[in-house]
Image (tube, rainbow, N blue to C red; front, side, top):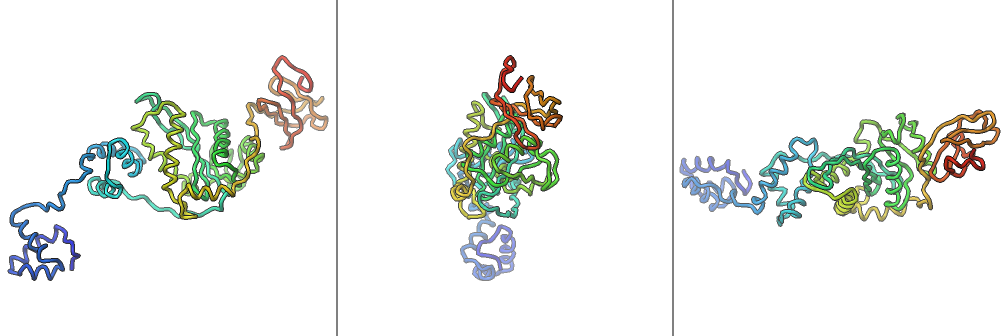
Length: 380
């Protein structure tokens, strides 16, 4: 027996029952509906009218062309923005007053090509323990004026417990931008994690060997001074960083760069941070069941204390071999080392303030930074 709401497919069955002289009351009893329902169906069929209840106008019909154009713009894109992005855009720029649920039903009915997202299983990390790091590369944005497209690099940081995210934008994707973005992210979080799980980036990993991977020397030295360990993710396995991959995709799809123009990089960063804050009030933390914003206040207590000064990032560095008299040449000058380091391979680093020389990870000399026409003291 059908449910109390009959689909249009039952109209032919009702008319056939009427032809063999079943009464309206008998048809209603067999179908489990009221007699008025059967009377309405028979009358509408005899007069050749459409079901007006199915053809009621919607308040969203005024936005149908806008929705269709938005979908067409992303027709050839590998990944489209979420439906929530389109709804926010209509409310903000076009004055849409309908609820999100009504909007979602309307799109599902008139634009069925939208499909549901997959669900992934999450493994929770202890609070303050894990930080995911990954680049969102070559993001095309319009800066200064419409049609002026610029490629922007975004380094994304996500805490494994609360899912709190920090995104640092830069024009380059070199080691300097990589290190400076780390410093900004640590300041935004207000503390340091125990372990960083980074992708197999050239800035971080020289050669991947799971736990025995070869880490970029500058990156390893920078993190070791902060007491942070590096545990690289498996290459070409997005699910290994599933906690952040979906967050990155949702955030950048929500921005809808195709229809927005920014004044400069600072304006873009400000809008991105604002959008991220709003989304973190909606996003849920799987470990606590609360919002990401609320969960971060809990996790922040477990982050390690920030250093007074961050390690200096090397402007120049080079490996050199000490001479027989204990002098080592670096950046246009000679530096005097102890006799035990004669003919030894050492690492010389210019931090912009001083020159530091290492041997097997140990500091064996620090010298003031002089200009090229000053060769005083230990720097000759």
